[in-house]
Image 1: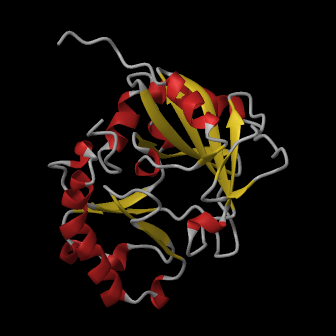
Image 2 (image 1 turned 90 degrees about the horizontal axis):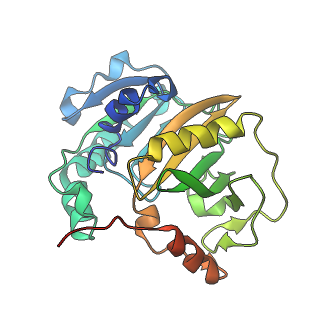
Length: 242
């Protein structure tokens, strides 16, 4: 879990299960902001904090020439200095003693008007139970201004939603390679009682997003509340000898 919650280190896990082809192109991983080779970066890229979550710790750069470099460096230094301890104190023990790093990856969306639908598969003991489809949120200042639908394993829209987002109320179109996405999510989730597997589907190409063990740090507001219990019933912890 410590390895897989780290957006830099998880790349090794993805490769170890034979799915390195899912990884987005990485331009560099840095421990120190002063070491970043800005000149070598393309005009468009995404900056990620390896220990970020809850939609934070990501900067989309559509034009390197218009980037306020000094302000960006200041933000990245705050990521390096503050995040691991802050998240560990919030009860997310898997972040304790993790080294903060900055990743530069390929920007998958073409411009600020495009969207990149995000498929988040809730897996329990290696099987998809349901998924989130989040759309129209990628380039918004507040990601909760986007739309979210909750779907079952067969991609049928469920009568439940996350109150922090606008609800998708009509059945969305299923990606042509959806079954492959389910197969990938179940393979990546095999070792864990529960993990959320996030995947992108860019023009038919499936790209790994992240593995998450604490969705939204826990307090998602599902409506109706009964859906919370339905999720909880799927979470079967292994027997332990104490």
